[in-house]
Amino acid sequence: MSEVKKNSNPDVTSHRFNQLRAAHQTELAEDYVEMIYELINEKGEARSVDLAERFGVSNPTVNASIQRLQKDGLVQTMPYRSIFLTKKGEELAKFCKNRHEIVYKFLLNIGVAPEVAHSDAEGLEHHVSIETLEAFKNYIK
Image (cartoon, rainbow, N blue to C red; front, side):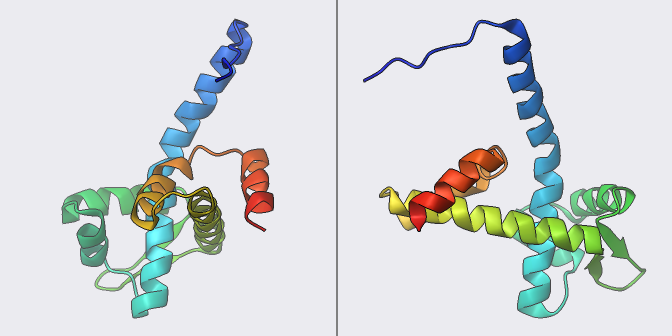
């Protein structure tokens, strides 16, 4: 097995960790808009109670996340109504769904079991670069 060459340049290392922290910060928003998009397509609407059930969290947790998404311009809500994606939110959701599918199909193509591939894709999708995503797409063609 070949040894992975490590870069000891502090600027390169700090850049890598900054990218990782940025990806962690966007994960929640990406997961929520993707799930809202799926719920709208499956049920015709996305409700807080459905999000809480899907994510296994409480309604107050969902409400706090939705408020953050509103501030970021990704969703709109109205009292006693469903949650709606803005144009920006829908674009992000479509991008995330596509990225998830590419990572999932790549994992299947290299022999990962479907259930494991689905679970692993949930984490990997947020950290894969556009370059790597393109390589995954080329591999699965």
